[in-house]
Length: 393
Image 1 (cartoon, helix red, strand yellow):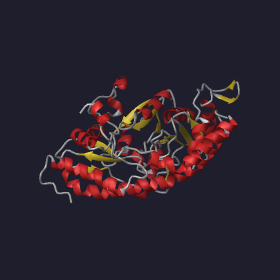
Image 2 (cartoon, rainbow, N blue to C red):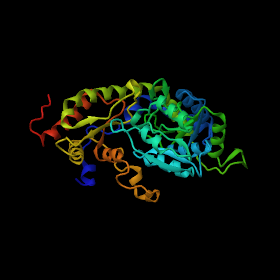
Image 3 (cartoon, helix red, strand yellow):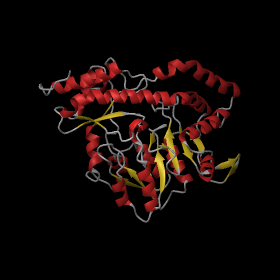
Image 4 (cartoon, rainbow, N blue to C red):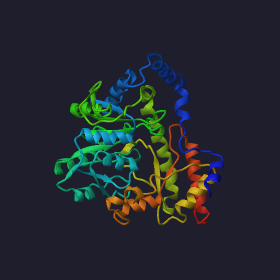
C-alpha cells in the first residue's frame, strides 16, 4: 500500500487523539497562554520557574531545569554531570535515536548493549559485561512507559561505581519498586513532545536532579553558559523551555495521574482481549511494574509463530482505519548515520529481532473498551485470513 493511499484512508481509531485531553481543559489552557501574553515574559518567565518546581516535585526530585527538547535534556544533563570526552556511557541499542545523539553531543562514547526480549528494557547482565575502566555512566531507557528496575540499577551502579542517568522521555510519573521515574539516578531527562503522556504544544524537555550543583550547571548550560547576563562561565548553548510551553504543561500536570490511569485501563483491556490470540503469535510486551507502568505505548510482538507477518498486519489495520506504528524499526547501532561507531548486524540479536516484530497499537487517554475490542477484532480478522482455524469469540 502506498503512503498516498494510507493518507486517504478514513481514520476510525487514531494512534493518538490529543483532542480528548485538551477539549475539557481548553479554557484553562487558553487562560494560561493569555497570562503569559499579558506578562510578556516569553523567555525564562515565571511560568517556567513555577513548572520546574511542580514537575521536579512530582518526580520526587529537588530541581528541574526546563530545556528545548528531550534530546537537550540528555546532552546538557550529561554535561552537567561532568560526563564527556574520554568517558563511556552504556545504553540500549533499541531506543529512539535522541538517546544516542544526547550522548554524542555530550562528547562521550556510546556503548550499546542488548535488551530483554520480553520487556524490551535494557539487559543489565549485558551491561555488566560492557563495563570498562572508562565507563562513567549507564543510561537506562524507561521504554514504552515502564521503568527499568530501580533496585537492579542501584545495585549495578554500586557494584561498578558508575552514575545512573535516566532517559525518562516516555515515563512521566511511572513507578516501580517504590521509585518514580527520574528519582533513581543522579539525574534524568524528560521530553514534552506533544504525544508524550505530558505533552506541550511543541517541543520541550526537562532535566530533573536531586543535586544542586548539577542543577546550577545545567541552568548555565541552557543559557549560553551564563549564571548572570553577559557573564559566561561555561561553554553553553541556547536551550530554554519556552514560558508559553511551561504554562501549558503546568496546567496539564494535575491531570497526568488520571490520564495515566486511563492508559492503564485501556492496557488491561488490550491484555484481556489479546489473550484470545496469544496462541497465534500475537504477544504483548510484558509488564513487570504492575500499575506503575504508564503505557506511553502499547506494544505487541508479531512473533515467528504468527500466521501473518507484521507488514501485512499493519496494512490490514490501516485499511480499516486503525492507525499503528513501530517503535522502533531500526536499532540505533544499524542507523546509517552512525556506522562510524563500528557496530554491525548481529551484534545485538534481541534488539534486532524485536525491531522486526514489534507493533504499537492505539493508546491514549479516552481510548475506550469498545475501541480496544475493535482493534483486537481487526487483528483477529487479519490472522483468520491466513489461518482458518482461529476462533475469536
